[in-house]
Image 1 (cartoon, rainbow, N blue to C red):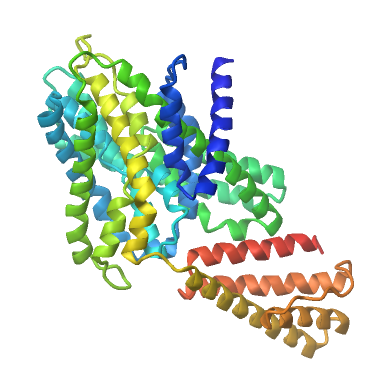
Image 2 (image 1 turned 90 degrees about the vertical axis):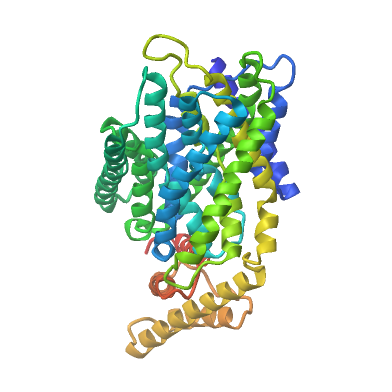
Amino acid sequence: MHAVGIVLVLVVLATSVATFARRLRVPAPSLLVLVGLAVAMVPGVPALHVPPQAIALVVLPPLLYSSAEELSLRDLRTVWRPVTILSFGLVFASAAAVGFVAVAVAGLPPAMAFVLGAVLSSTDPVAVTALGRRLALPGRVQVLVQAESLFNDATSLVLFKVAVGVAVAVGGTVDLPAAGGELLLLGGGGSLVGAAVAGLVWLIRRRTADPVLETVIALVTPYAAYVLAESAHTSGVTSVVVAGVLLGRSGRRLTDARIRLQLHAVSAVVVFLLESVVFSIVGLQLPALVRDLPAGTGWWPLQALALAAVLIAVRVLWTLPLTRGVKPARGRLSWRVAGVVTWAGTRGVMPLAAALSIPLLTADGDRIPGRPLVLVLTTAVVVLTLVVQGLTLAAVVHRSGLALEPEHTAREEDDARDALNRAALDHVDHLAALEVMPDTAIDRVRRGLAARLDRTPETPDGTTADAAYRQLRHEVITVQNARLHRLYAEHLISDTTLRRLQRDLDLEQAGLGRV
């Protein structure tokens, strides 16, 4: 009951904070972390100890799956080279830099410094997605930041396992060939499991038309991908990401408008609750971990600040040359993209879960030296990046000139709507010429489409109960759906515009009911 009470309090707290965050126009994750810190420092508040398995198994799969579903495969194809290099090279560089600085500044043993470097080496997909959702970035830049955070997990996880193995073993050494094989097993095996789960779910959903069953399948899929991959000793995170990416673009073909709207609503609620709780936990954890620090470690705030600065510096030094030398399919990246990519590389709940899973004892039964300090430094760096980078990311994007102006987005949406309505009018004219539909239904639909093109309010004429009229409207929406996805495939609209117009068409079609 105590755990249930804590979860309920966190949900109420997170909902209240999210409401204020929207009014203040600040990122909810950053505000949730600050509020969690403030609550944890109130006298009498019990310390919160969250098992890392709870974060990894309960929280991460649906959040990762949701982020992967939002990833644009079209834009990913244009930035796969920089994503690949960042997911491997930058992770190694960040781990090495943090390890060296942790030895010099924090006095950690080299093995534990390497563990800390591995924990902090990769960006966090949950934090990156949550912070980037409110930014009007071009699709290619958004995908670059988001895809890097989703695909660098396998690399950092291998580094973490190797580092922990060295720290736990007496006189342990690093076996590079074994580490390379483990990287292939984690990344490649996780990808295969994720693809297999996606294929199985696709076959099941093709034969399902029940909204309740569709919702259950959508909620279970990320957990199935994670558990199966972990049971096969591969990367559960990679498996969830691959399954989400593959299923994200097939949803339109697998479900109808009514089910898509329901799945979107359920997913939005689940993501909101889990994100809110998990960012509150990050803030609540730090004071409790600080209390467990041994004597002589009072300099941890400055040490955490130094490590955060090193991570940003390495990211800048790595990203700038990379953006000059790696050319996506549609032009080369610039320093403005490098600045945004650097500042958007926040750490989050995944490093915290990894740090909490560090064993307590060595192979000889002795306590691992430096573990409490590693936990505190990890949590402090996560808090710093979420708060400082989170609160200033919008300003960095604005100053970079990359943010899409609202007028640009609105104009693109209007042009796309006009293209859909013109395609629908052409279809209606074709049906009128064939004389296969009643004239009254043709005239009503034609007047409605003409009003949309003229930007004038539609005047309701009768009801939608007429079967011929509803059938024609369904046909028109099918034509508009096809035209919408052709516009997207031809790079004439962004992923954001595609999603908005798809939702509008789904709402219109669901309102008509079944023919």
